[in-house]
Image (cartoon, one colour):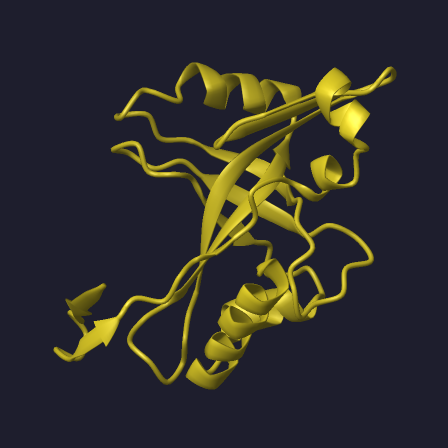
Length: 168
């Protein structure tokens, strides 16, 4: 797919989004657990453990590229509180609804190490677009630093290649 960039006026080929089809908590379940305690679709995931229920929604994150006119897009999952998840679910098909929630990043991204989850703010979007997540700036992690400082085109292409090789 080709398009003309509004920033530079040049024709580019689209980069694929780096997408995760499920949250890490779902990925680590056994096949039996996935069938018995979890539900997953393209936008929602719920895992009902005996002592707690985990709730996740699918979101997007746009990584700025410092030397290129295209952003790198991620398709990620965040966990929400029960109250936030219910509010989002109730308003999922409302194209005029806008809100923000606190959420925890729920994927381990390639090229980064995670000892703990990254806190984020989740911003819902009008017109049926997936919510956008913004990591909390004061959280000390290389991914957060890269988000706020940007990455190079070469780094973005390396990540795309790594994701394609890992999922192939």
